[in-house]
Image (cartoon, rainbow, N blue to C red; front, side, top):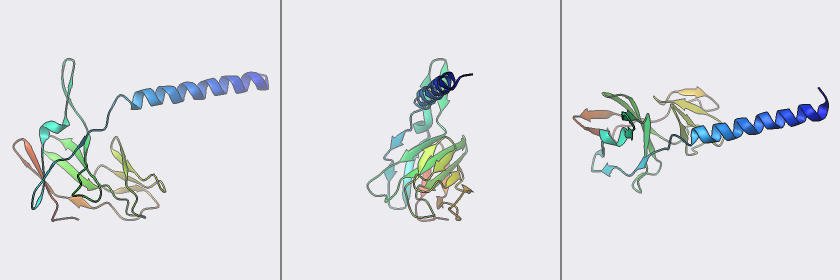
Length: 149
């Protein structure tokens, strides 16, 4: 293959991949809510995770709570209908706000990654994320902001 043809086909492949991955990642929108913050914690409805689709109902794997009362957002992962994890979205390496992508929280500053339970999976962060206990009461979730671990 000649150099010119190689470069042309390589650039075409890269551009196609970039366009496809941008399109596919746009299919799943991150949902932000403010939640109801009370004296002891945050209350949200489990219905916040519902995504109505043709042919039925699906569930988002996570939602993000942004509220003026919080210094950093809280990412709430739906593990299953009875199990949820609530994670403080502040990187434990140098304090940058994390970004959610599927079942991973990523630090845009230095590349640390955390799983949906807040455990470090990629450094340089060496400490797991702060988490909050989540109690499921019928159709509501209560995130106890008094008890960080």
